[in-house]
Figure 1 (cartoon, helix red, strand yellow):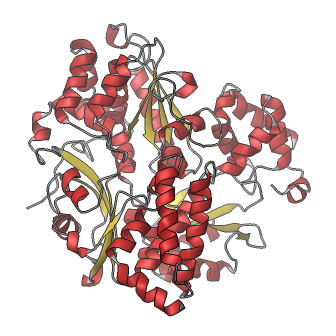
Figure 2 (tube, helix red, strand yellow):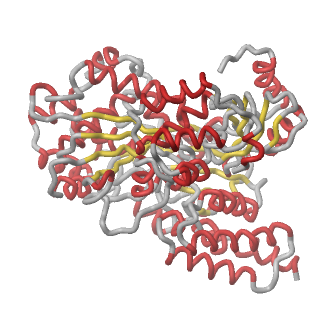
Figure 3 (cartoon, each protein chain N blue to C red):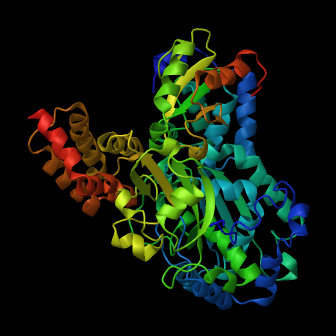
Amino acid sequence: MNSTKTKSFEVLTKDLACKIDTIINNFGSNSTRLVGILLDIQDIIPKQYIPREVATYVSEKMNIPLSKVYDVISFYGALCDIPRADYVIQLCDSVVCKVTGNSFLQDTITTLLGIKENESTSDGKYWIESTPCFGACDISPAMRINGKVYGHLTTSESVKAVLDKYNEGSVMV
Amino acid sequence: MTKTVSFITENFDKYDPNSIDSYLNINGFTAVRKAITTLSSGEIINIAKSATIKGRGGAAYDTGRKWGQAAAVQGDNKVVICNADEGEPCTFKDRSILSKDPFRLIEGMIIAGYTVGAQNGYIYLREEYRHLKSLIKNAIKETMEKGFLGKNILGTNFSFHIHLHSGAGAYVCGEGSTLIESIEGKSGRPRIKPPYIKECGLFQLPTLVNNVETLAAVTAFIQNGTDDYIKYGTKLSPGTKIISLAGNVNKPGTYEIPFGITLREIIYDIGGGVVDNNKLKLCQLGGASGTIGSDSILDTPYTYEDLEKVGLIVGSGGILVVDDRTRVIDFVKSIQDFFIHESCGKCTPCREGNRQIAKIIDRFVQGTSGVNDLDTAERFANIMKNCSFCGLGETAQNVLLSAIKIFPDEFKRLEAVGK
């Protein structure tokens, strides 16, 4: 948790609070649905993370201790408490992608974007992180961009072709 | 001649998974209709027993027996969970079932609910498969609209509902009690047993947890009978298995195979051989928690009993082929990094054992290992295997232990470098 980083953003606008209320209500305000609620909330927050003020809001709204909310956020790999980017690029670093040559994919994408793992581009558009197996071993080496899977990324042309779709804005997520 | 078969996967690409009408056109829901209007709970359990199908998530527990125990537990309110948290690296066969035949899975859950006396079913779908969420949601909705889910299904006293829950990226949630913690909205850490989840599971209710493939298979048994299934395979491993073949192989993918064909047939005939005609270095069966074998096991038949003889497992059905461009130690390191990331941290043997073993493996990779490092790693690995709280810690060192046994020279050579 990085409170200094998240506080300065002041993301919890009235509009966002309203949307969060809708998500919580869709799950029947049920504390057993906390994991799903946080995932859905993260999806609608710019830079794809759960800011501290949002975690606090959820905790008060649902009457769950803040420590429990953070137990869930910090435990699960799909939930993040620091701002990422518009597009989160997840590179699979599982053993299958490793033996089929994912180091080439890692090198190519970090060179093309000029950032390292767990960094975002200066315009806030892309973020790179590595992730355990997401079950695309049949098309490895693979990556996900905002959850969408791309595979067979063994040449720089194939990697560029995927990124171009996002640069041109032809993919709307 | 093709060596693959189609029994559990017979519906793949035969209908539009977005449409129940399309599924009904290929005799969809005849299994549910047959089960709840003509069969008793005991008869269904006997059908599962006659197929001698073992749990397909990896633990290989006899399904008929599991259902029998679940049905015998007292309680008016029970739960069926479909474990779709397919997290083992090199395993994606459940993804194929979920995306190509979601209705067969739903039928399996309804039949399971009817058999054990449950009113609610939960599908726990891993976050990584979120792209399948709308497909499954739609399948549940359409099944409800056609009256195969909901109150008094087909005019009987049996009522059943299915709920879809999403995981959030945690391998350990594939373990039954951990998955239950996650569905209850908590972080995923395993529960102590007893009480067993069959008696006290989700929301303290008697709970039956089955893998996607197991549930789909039961639907096929009810619909087609088990004769066409047990004609495949061997005496001790009858039937078929859906495998996920990947790695340095020409035709990676999901295949349904009869038990009893050899690993050579799987890798070379079905999988088209190793890429660029490279030499096969090793293969790993059953995902990251499975053991590895060298090319000497290629002629071993793929059955529970034959694989066990050479120290391998069927597990989740993952078959990872690795050619000689990868060093054994780098392979072991990759698996070790995975388990460090995925250990939940609840118990000391797994949390600390993984960390300490990783340090030693890193020394081997860098060529700076000391004289006792291999013995120490092996000792720690055995402690983890015997003392960890759940299956994750118990199996995390299968790779290291089998690698030391099968490729002792690779470690000895690296050990010498550090001296």
